[in-house]
Image (cartoon, rainbow, N blue to C red; front, side, top):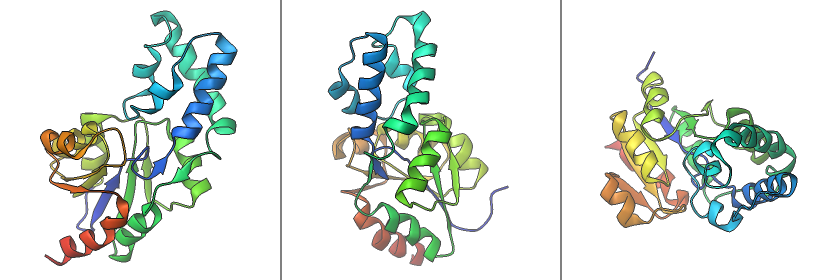
Length: 205
């Protein structure tokens, strides 16, 4: 049930973490195993949508599910350690908690692998929900009463709007300020280092 506690949702890839090196490595290993051609630089330039959407660009329809399963299996040993926290990520989560709020991560990523990222990087979110994309993220945001959702992709903006949450866009991912604004973002920040001060002002208003 939603509560009166301030709950803030965050996207994961390219919002809290720079997973491009890890994802590139996982795709390279998958390509080596399967013999499929995968332009890994192109893949990591457009992170956000579900894995299945990307795999359809490189595998025939009847092989997509198997490729996704294998990628997810390769991921823990390939993609976790090369991935870094983006500037301000830990501080943004801690800023929510310092106000007595709850920080949740809502991502399209496979939840067990998302959990490994948070644990490895010491990002201590209160709630993690994986496997949700764009408007689908509203399901988790509404369930937990999130008033704010922070993300780098227009899909994140759509998810926030579907949940009637304030959309905070960061320009650390594939979408620039103009794209986020056009999608309906309420606030645009260059990165998460600006988030704690913004949140304090928002909470005090």
